[in-house]
Image (tube, rainbow, N blue to C red):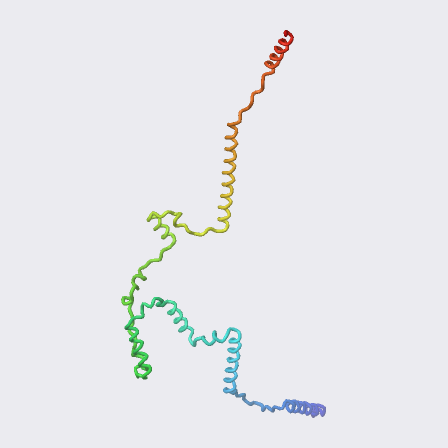
Length: 228
């Protein structure tokens, strides 16, 4: 026979579990399957992506995200092709035939010509390189480097001093100025020494009178006085 003390304890555990479920407010049946709301998940994912995009726009700017293409490979191909194409800066492609084709295309668009919606119809004729004036000359023209320029000048007999028009640096200008000052000081010192030598040629040293001759003349004068 089961002891009577265990039964009240089991009843208390059942009552505690019932009270917990009642306090949570949700009754879940045992063995029930959870079903995911696909519509809610889709809307949640969309809102999350939109929030991330808004944060990215606030950080990098709206223009950087709006220009983002759907396919990265196509965008890179278009950028490469645009870089390889040369712009018609001189307007060499602006011919009368091209102008007439442009006017015809505009008239077709205004009149809603059905050919506009046909992808096989071409309103512009392709221009070849032979039709562009000066295209072959630009293509065959080689770039001239600095060494080629100096070699051409040497072959033509142009002096290096005439060709060298490169402005001097501040250090080079200071060095040249210092050399010029030293040269002028040296020239002034040389001129002063040459002047001193020229003045020395005109100055003649005066000879001192002989002491013996002076005493002899004095004695002769004294003898004459005594004789007189």
